[in-house]
Length: 111
Image (cartoon, rainbow, N blue to C red; front, side):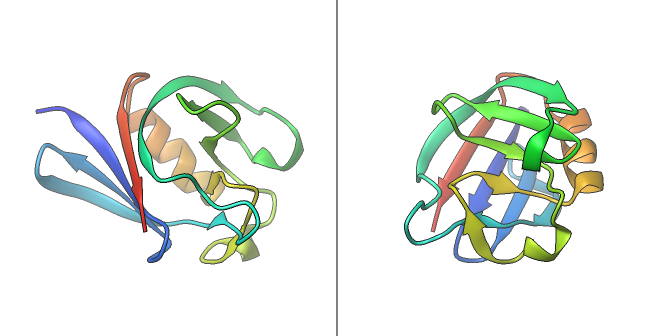
């Protein structure tokens, strides 16, 4: 079975699955009203450690240009609608997730 990621913007939760089996759920921050997180199905196309700026310890780019799953230098933002559309995670969580999924992993984003 293939691992894939399910993102619920309304529940502020990212879930990692292996086929139909839930492996782990993580709290996230998502886009604000003026810059919502885009719904749809994408893939992880790249990973970058220590990308700089507000992206925390790791960036995983999505197949939708300019969007990704990344860490944060503002952990108080997790659980809120505050980003410019990206999916923010605690730094330790994004490192753990990145080590569990390869480039090409499917990411399904919905409300």
